[in-house]
Length: 218
Ligand code: DX5
Ligand code: ZN
Image (cartoon, rainbow, N blue to C red; front, side, top):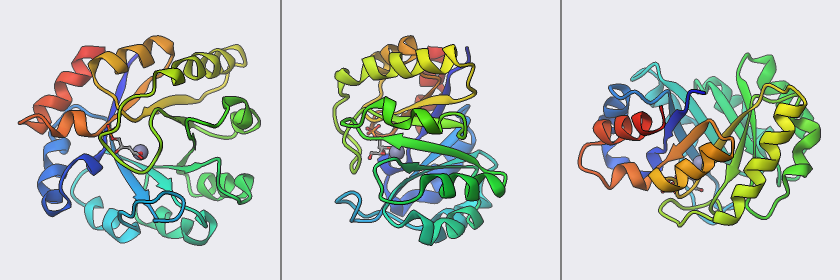
């Protein structure tokens, strides 16, 4: 199985974004991960659709957009029009998830559901035949640079088992505290996409760091 890497630009400085996108464009990462935060669903606030749209012309990499926001229905069109390739929203929001999924899919964009560490994987069972990826959060959403929560491994194993058993076509992406060691545990448990922020950005050469992480698992 091929492991994909989705570097999270939240790990870098927003003052340097064009260079970051160019470094990632030259890397072997398949995705670029965008963490949208609204200061409501999570305490932190990052950027909106304009930011994504402004970077769209700089690379052909897959834009993996992770919405940590409430009122997804209100702004979904803007994230679709910004050039997202995958849009993942949170299960814990208080909205009609089926409608959100069908709006995303109608626009030929991949749809994902993310779950916080405290949410059971069984809560999203009924959506798994409708979506393309799940994000299992291995930190509390809101900030980069947190420590990986090892108690989430069982959840990855369980959802992977269910996906395989039911022949579903859903990728498991892991978000939070990923490095060589924790990434290995997740891949062994059944994940196929790893988001990595601070681990990549604390190294001197972002392109090289990304390639090394990718090579490690492939
Ligand atoms: C956290 C974000 C993550 C974050 C990962 O809420 O969803 O994508 O950027 O950063 P690291 O890899 O530093 O945990
Ligand atoms: Zn994320």
